[in-house]
Length: 152
Image 1 (spheres, one colour):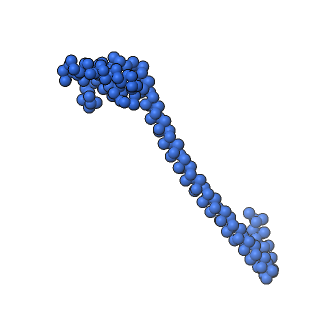
Image 2 (cartoon, helix red, strand yellow; image 1 turned 120 degrees about the horizontal axis):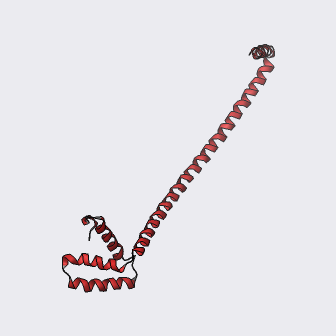
Image 3 (cartoon, helix red, strand yellow; image 1 turned 135 degrees about the vertical axis):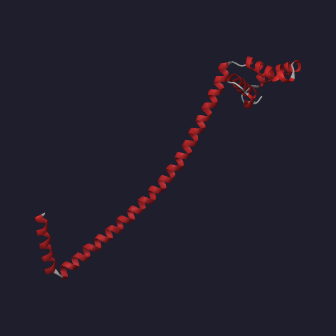
């Protein structure tokens, strides 16, 4: 039975139930033995063309719709769980990258801070030397600067 050959939704649902029933991981050994016994007895008495349809109908009569719904729901939960696991892995890798970037940027900021402190220390030293060497010029420009501040 092939899903591509299904013409309607009913046939597709029959195919899906058939697929779920014949999947070895979804059936218990006891249930599988019943299905094999029933299919052996029915396939020997039916024609080759109708045997697949009859097998599907027989298998469908052996399974509750609730069981199928539960199996489908569990499969969906499994997919959701896998997606969440992938999301967690992706988030963890991005968090690690962000931590690395943060550490690098923190180090860069600390280097910039030390560079700025060095620059301001040099400016203060230069200013101190300028004041001692050229005291009269400094007083003149300092007075001019104060006058400009008052005007504003």
